[in-house]
Length: 590
Image (cartoon, rainbow, N blue to C red; front, side, top):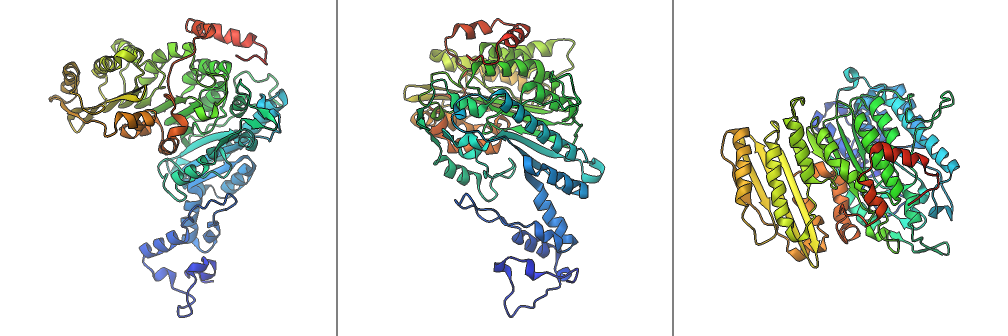
């Protein structure tokens, strides 16, 4: 084979030359643009089909034809990777053989494969042996990937780095009571910046979603009223398991992790139910993800209130202090377990955000906002309290000043009879906070409220761009005028930021109140300017495919059950809660 010849034997059948075509074409004589088009056509992914056993064609073999083909197809192959636990060692050997391949890698999905489990274990939490096995697999998977990625050299491989998505599940998680399409092992990997590559994520998800089931009767038994099958899928949060030479046991500090500055972004999506323990995640952030620039954390509220409380406590005491100083964007959204999965399960399972969390979130999120450029705090955060905390911090003489540029806030009405006026008051309060944010570019506030067969929804948006400032007010038809005090207070912000008067517009929603209600309020997502800050494009596409699966009431409502223990949590300190949780027996549950 000549070095600069097109090897037709390696081409797909539909690209083989006819009898009138010469068997060899001078490859080097073709213009570079034509060569790139040919290679792009050879490497096109086939359209997704509904045969779950189908595997995509392997184009990596084309990289052996010549150097030009190698560069092109290795760039395609290594650009986005799905790495299961079983192929991490192979990935390590490939990269160590030629570490220049790291320059192509932009997205990695690490899918940690946990062991199978039979019935009736699908209804009960893991035992100690299962927890240990899961932790060993988790520890090996994370450490193996980090040991490979630490070979990255920005001078040799470029400074862009990659985005890492982490998930963990057992194949049996969706083979008992719940069949969830986006947790299937062959669910395709699409990076957020390119969600429409074949197979289209919307088509694949719609296909799986129509075949999602919740079996009320399984293995001859009805589903537990305590939601045991839901708790099993969410599982016990994964922890780093100390290696044999670490004799002091797990104490929240796992030191045997390398620093990996190649990882610039971290994504944990709501579709992946099993979580990483907050202490282990904090260890990963502080010791390995030393150059992390953005972090998107989406999670499902845990079905076990005690587990939910442990997360909230760990989020405050471990996770927040460990966020790298390089972090510039943070998005955190918590979702209720879909109502379709909670059928015939005791009310409140997987819906409760505790008062302890509601009490500390405004203050802690205000502190965090000072060091970020782009921010989406949890939707359960009391927006008014958050803004007041921001104002207090910004006025403090010891603070260095905020670098915040873009922020999106959700307002949850606490008084249904006055939701519109309460939203107006929060918008005015946001103007007072904006006066203290010298780099602010966009702030967006939104609210929805369902009542009977109607839905109220509002969006307020302030944009500062190219020396001009304007506000947009969106509400149901017929459109209402922007309240005068909002124009007055935000005009002060515009004058301070741009030295010019404020421009303003009123844009009514095109949907009727009935259509808004039918969507469960989720229609508003597509109208948000900063929706990709609230959740990435993949999650947004999935939400649009799941309107009737998620809505049935607001999926992110911050309300809680009238429970005396939950009410008492609002006055507890972090130290008190940590002590109480440590003293509980291992099998305790609420």
